[in-house]
Image (cartoon, rainbow, N blue to C red; front, side):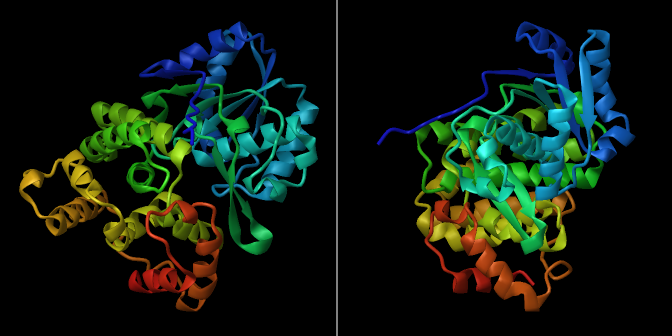
Length: 382
């Protein structure tokens, strides 16, 4: 069986990367941008950093900001209408996963109108055409949506998140500029950073992992582990390294999938609006313990990448515990809660467990699971 790997056509990295947007847009013959960005980024002037580049180059654009933190079917439907009315021929997505996921869904539906019913995009949709070209500008160091073929939309009517996987949605160009992330508050920096670490660890142990994806994931674990604390403290070095680390993780997991940390986190976002990175960070160590028997020697390499010394002299039980403890310590150091007791209502656990089992990320988990076992994992986190 052949292993497929999909990445951006082009990506720019480093301080000032957004200055390249004008040249890319002009070089590709684009005329007018549909700028997708959430209201807070507009309010605090982050979006303006990009529109200033467009203004300086004489490039036209319109702004779409009806985007929630966990974007909904309605956000996408409204965006499709607004795109059609705008006269735009490409999209610039500015933000975290919310803006980029909304942009991907809009872009797919515009060029594949038979999928106008947004819920039809769930899972692996059989779209025929590439989405409207997207230039992606991340403002958080976590989701890596600028380099993935995935997006997540909330079906508010059913209190569930739809994971959509489509090779046609990947942005054509990514501009990974740490200066666009410098205004992130500590809590958001910590949450998105732990989301990135979860991507790297789950991607490394997922059933679909292989040598090429392992290369990206191990390097991402190393970079994130050494830089997240600094990013939370807003050091330039921490911001720069986290911007790279989360992107490298995205290059891997986009191509091989994730596991039940994500499938358990998604329902928490849909039901309680829990920040995705916080949910992942709380769940990750517990699921690592659960998955350990199905991971061979991989936890030794996770521990090594996280800076644990002497792993080659440890027994399998010792290095597995060392890897899990290193994750717990990093999560604690950046201020993530230790459990779900302030988030989850016990009476909701049956719904959460079924939703997690039905989630598109669950089949990639290295250990086969069940609704009953996921139920117990949720209960253990209260």
